[in-house]
Amino acid sequence: MFLGIATFIFTFPIFSVIDYLNRGIKFVEVCGTIGYIITAFLIYYVLTLLVILLVRFIIALIKKKHHDVYDKTTVILSTVFSIVICILGIVLAQVPEVSYYDFDIAGEHDLNVVVLSDIHYGSTGSLLSLDKMVDNINKQDADVVILAGDVFDNYIGNLSRDEFASAMNRINSKLGVYAITGNHEFKLNSLEQIIYFYEGTQVKLLLDEEVIVDNIRFVGRIDYKHGRKELSEVVSTSKLPLVVLDHQPQYFREAIDVDADLQISGHTHNGQIFPGDIIVYFYNLILFNSPSNGINHFADFTLAITRGYGTWGFPMRLSGASQIVIFNLK
Image 1 (tube, helix red, strand yellow):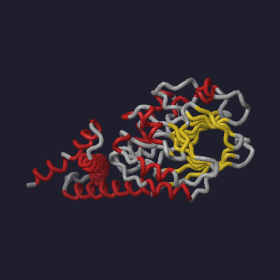
Image 2 (cartoon, helix red, strand yellow):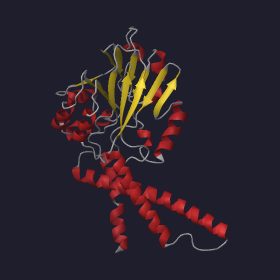
Image 3 (cartoon, helix red, strand yellow):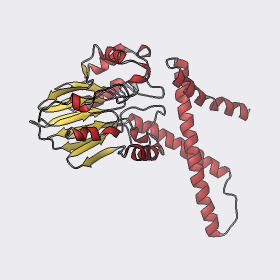
Image 4 (cartoon, helix red, strand yellow):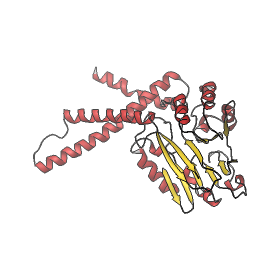
């Protein structure tokens, strides 16, 4: 009986793999989401178990008393801690943190720029509510709203254009809503399909384009894997302050080369769940000599990397809550 139940439960993670290979089957998506939660539980069960075993082993050495370090109490504690961690992760993914940064960019007026990245609308494992997201944006009194890539994450035929357009058109922004592409929009869609999905919305999709908003230049880049231009070809010769929007942060030195003041990126999720943050940190550092999260200063240039708003795969965040970033450009 126990073996049968365990076998049934542990088949759910297989659906996560099936869904990744063949998107759009609702039953598989639901089972895949359960599979991600079970996988997260197992990860934290093993990590918690190892910590408890180590602590009990050290206590046994100190007391010089031999007793079993692995018993029923150890299993119960590991199970309870793992469940609590997973619940906390789901809550942190649903309750975004609003982060504020003042940035002196010598613009004509103060500009309140609200940034969300990695929304992952349509992603399996996501518990995203577009309406709730828009409500959170509209609380911020935005001059400009920027969606910094990975806005949707599925084949557009599996998504509701009406739902998406309705949400996008409800965003309140005095000077416009702008978006760039990330890597996930391209996983199942061509550039033409991505452009089509944004039609009927107020969102201006920046495809290697520069726009001037209140005497600040914003340059939106196509994701680096998908045939974009050199940044020097996109940037004008204007001396106005320059903000580069590039979904993936690792090529920020291109922005430095064109004398940008600020680059805004996402992509990394800061690993999303522990120990993913540690893995992402060393991955970016070793392969690209690049930061993977937060506000990073390089002389007269700043690289800002948001953790992102939505989730991919695991419907939880344990390396920092979901994030909305507000830049007060002065």
